[in-house]
Structures are given as C-alpha cells and as structure tokens.
Length: 513
Ligand code: GLU
Image (tube, rainbow, N blue to C red):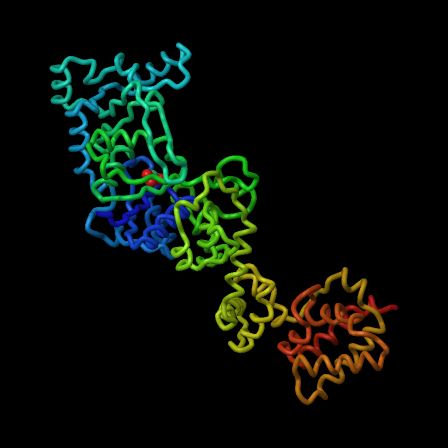
C-alpha cells in the first residue's frame, strides 16, 4: 500500500530562519500539498547551548507570512505530539540502548582533555582529519576497550559518558537521493558520532532519525549541507531495523552568492544591501537588527514565487505562479542539482509584477497609509487614481509615497538639469496663458487640459514637445513621471495654476532666452 506522504521541516531554534531555510520549508510544503500529504514542523532543540529565545516564534511567524501552512506542529499539535525534541527527551534513550545491545553503539568515557590529546597525537602523526573512529576508538576509554566490570562500575557511580555509534571500518554506504541519484560514501569517512550526550540529550543525528521514524516521515527534503550526514543516517536506519520504511532523501542545491562564488551568507546581504531573512530580526543578545523581506516591502506571494524559482523551474517560460499554481506544477524531479545564484533584482521584479497585478483600490490603501503618517488626508477615490497612475513606477508599497508625494505637496525645488535646459522665455509665455486660461475650462479633465494647451501652443507657434518637460518640472518638480495631463487632472486646476505661478517666479533666472 502507498504510504501517505508525510514531510517535515525541522529547524533548530538557533536564530532567525535564513531564506534558504524558508525555501526548504516551501518545497516540503509544495510536495505535501501536491500529493495530498501532510506537512509537519518539528523543532530540533536538542542543543541547548545554541538555543536562542524568540527564534521559534520567528520561525512560526515567517512561515505564516509566506502562506506555508502546517498540518502538525508544536503549536498546533497533532497525532505524533510532542513536536519539540526537548519535550521528547525521554523517548530517545531506549533507541541508543537498542543500538548498544545490538553491538552498534558503545559507551565512551573520555574527558574533553583526553579527546584533545587524541587529536593532538593524530595531528602530530600527520593524520589529516583526526577523529574518533574504527581505528582510534581502540586507544580510547570506552566500553569496547575497558573491562566489562569497570564499565558497569563507572556507569553505576554516575560518571559522565556519551554513547557513540560504532561505524564499521570498511563499508560502502549507498544512498539514493531524489535529486542527485546514487550517492556513495566510504564508512572510513564517517566518524563514531555521538548519539547521546552527557547531559542525557540525544544529538541531532539520533533524534532526527528516531523522530522521522516515529513520525512516519516519507520524504526528507533538506539543504545540501546535510548530505555528508546522510550516509550516517542510513547506517542508523539499518542498525535500528527501520530500513524498510526509511524516508526518501532530497538534498536541495545551495543558494549561492550573487557572483556564484560560495554559499550565500548574512554578510553578503549586509554588504550588497539585501535581506537574507524573511522578517526583521533583533538579536536578543547583541541587539543587532537584521533586515527582513517583509519590512523591505516584499509581498509574501512575490517572495514565495521568487523562492520557488531558486532551485526549481517548471520547464516552461511561465514565471508567475500563485501558491496554488506552484502546488500544481511542483515536482522534486525538476529541482536542479547545482547551486542557484542569488539575484535580488529578480526578487524585485517579482514584487513589481505582483504589485501591478493588484487592483488600484488596494494599492490606494498603501498610499493612504503613508499619507496618514504625514498627516495628509485624501479621498479613497483620489488615492485610487494616483495609485493607478503610479503603479508602473513602483517596486514596493512604500514607493508610492516617494513617487506620488508631489500630488499633495507642491514642489519647492526643481531639477537644475531640466531647468537649465528647458526653462525659457517662450515656454514661460505659454505657461502664463495656460495658467490664466485654466479657469475658463468648462470641463476640467486630462483631455480638455490637453486641448487647451495645444490651442495655446498653436497661437505661439510652438509644439507640445517643446514645453512638456518644463511644464512637468513646474507642476511636479520631477524629471519624469506618468502622463502629465492626468497628473494635472488629479492635482486640480487651482493648484496647477498656483504651482505654475510659483515656478515662473522661482525659475525666472532661467527664462532669459
Ligand atoms: N535541525 C536541522 C536543521 O536545523 C534539520 C536537518 C534535517 O532536515 O534533517 O537544519
């Protein structure tokens, strides 16, 4: 019988979620929804030294913002609760014991100093990667080298110990990755990983495998950085007798720096001026603030569409996909093997597309919000008209204010460049007439304004192209913008006449020719 697809996103609450992590969550979610399966979130908090307060809430809020819905999670619960590993602590020891009993794991009593000594010794002997493994374990203090009585006595006296996996010396570990095909690793490259720590907590490796098994996970989709651990995980499944139901693995390609050299880091974002986190994050220890996509003005649907394309493509020219369309089209087979170069311009492009697709009435709300912050009131109708005129010119909701503030505030400064090139006496003569005749218009709208201006220009023996830039400068102070006649219609005839008068005064120095 086909198993129900169950995928999990398993972040550790050690800080804000990197966008690479959000992409992992997204791909898991898409597969779950596409197959009618379940999306699970498990918090992997076994490393208490790295616990960061607020990180779990941050993860939750980030996923909610992106529209990634969870079927089972620590805050929603579910049939396999609890979903925080720290709350599952009592479950893990029995599996470590099972491994000890079957001869696949052992107790180790080495102190930190003894481990350091071992590494020093191996380094001196020119061993490239000194590690606790099939060879070195024979020289260390563990239940394989110490007499049985002594082991019992050490355990009984409460001495600190860890439990390590006994990795075979010579064995090829094979693993089929859904993206990379067969991956082969020699067991000599794997060290005797600690499974249970001296504080009684399991390590990531043991807890992750036990939980994936107990939670009936069918597919493990995670970042490429976990590929080196995968053979070890295969050994754990085998030794625990769970190979039959071992999940399928898919290791996602790395997100690369914009120049393609190496993994995208927070530092790249800081240096190049883009966020690497979905939401703004304030480090609870240092107070350092890192920017987020949400606060930078990205729409969640644009952000997720952008993320989906960082490693996956539909195999067609289509780029704009709603979440439902992504679910329809997604397949793990179409995830690339090689790293994906990060391109913030593309993220911006997606945002522009999604903004422009919104109805003007919704865009008007962005503008009204900014207006309120500046103590300016406007009718929704007016804001809607302006939003409609400006939407081709904005990348982010907050741009509406920057781009459109001249609708509400008369210019006080004028572009020196345009003024020196385009402001001249013949134009001023046209503007004087225009200003005086505006009140005579019966119907005031973009069309009648244009007719009036054309008629005046004809009288002066001039053409529209000769005055347009100067007129725009006088009315808006800007060098470019949407159709000027529509701008004038929105600004109104009195205000336009006033602005013209002010510009004629202020720019008189240029009108010498
Ligand atoms: N806790 C691991 C992480 O933080 C999960 C890795 C996995 O998905 O197996 O990325």
